[in-house]
Image 1: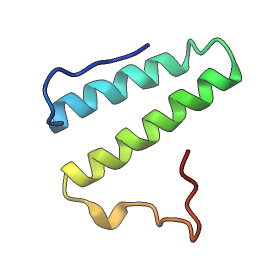
Image 2 (image 1 turned 135 degrees about the horizontal axis):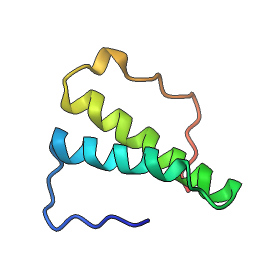
Image 3 (image 1 turned 180 degrees about the vertical axis):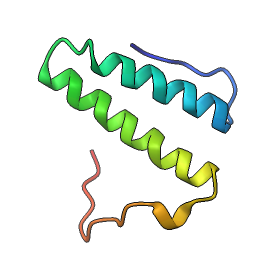
Length: 69
């Protein structure tokens, strides 16, 4: 599943819709690799939700070394 947004802003409603869609897709993941990719996307949307709802104190702490793909 690929979701393309035409606008360049993310509001809480749009983010929650995307997160719900990702959670539904987790149940249908065809393989472990797809499940990992979906979980990564859901994790990012969960972080976006915390930022948009101004609950930054609940954000996970960043690891000392961050890997960039």
